[in-house]
Image (cartoon, rainbow, N blue to C red; front, side):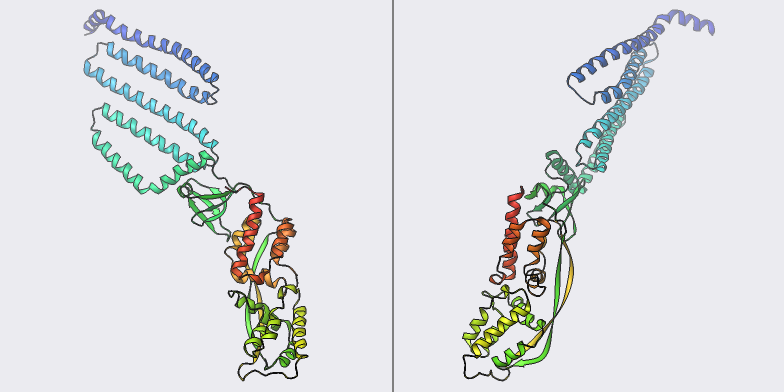
Length: 468
């Protein structure tokens, strides 16, 4: 037996030696080729100032040597005297190893390079980066598996069909998510918006951006609600962007409202003499109700009635002369209820002094004095700058608007509305504060007054800030 083996080796020594020589020659050539190739690549990358050349070279240097060894082993097997079926078998094994190492190298290279480039887009969250890299890993792994299955003669068509159906199903189920992700890339690439911008969509959503996620943009609306706006909607909509942060107030403006309760006092007057006598003694809450609260109730009328006294004198007594004089009393001129009371009393007494008799109204049409009981109610709305202020002003109730414009002047004895005080004292915008202060609120409905104030502030913002 040993003699036959020796004889066979003597006869076939050349066919056995050649594959071994070829294999070691491939190793030597691989070492030389790798050194020359990678020196050349390093020179080219340096000339082109590619910052990631070290990642590419370090990731591919070792696998390149492995591929050369696999190639040498494959050539050696083909030159060896082993039967053809063994050559085919070992060839498939070496090819599979090559596919695995090549796929792994591509995956590692993609992960390292993509992670660097995606991090440069600071708008892309880390979670999105991981998802993209994982998706690429899965895609290349699936391709490698399909190639190896085909190499070993296994049926690939059913698997590809199943995979195709699965991909279509996943795309259909997550189409909105995918659209939002790609829209997020577009937003990031063009640097359209940033955290801190105030945006307003044509569909009405608006607020400050405080987070840009992989699929949604998180904005804080003026009423402190968190809105999630899909990235795809940002690209499809007309978006107004305040590119510069408005001036922050030293103190925020806190919107308040108030609740009025009516209380019948039991006091009533059938003529102007009784009216003026009672006016001299009642408390301020009664005067307030028949002047300011009256205006609020009838604010939708144009022109607005001046006060309850003028309306009663004209309608119940038919005294249009005195009614007109009382209507001409400009409530806005007075900073206290006391001063307003005195003015109304003087107008009535002056007219009484000119008359010889006082006319009574018909029974049942007497003037009934009503007291206003009020409670101030803080709201959740807080403005830190003019942009926040006007967006809140658009949505607050008319009671809130009335409280800060009318009550602050008269009942709270401030002499000017709350808005002008805050804009002047906390923002230093004296011109704007004066423009709002000189508005005659009695010349507008409350909605009209709201619109006028918003228009004045928006003009100020357009002057100071760039809006896109």
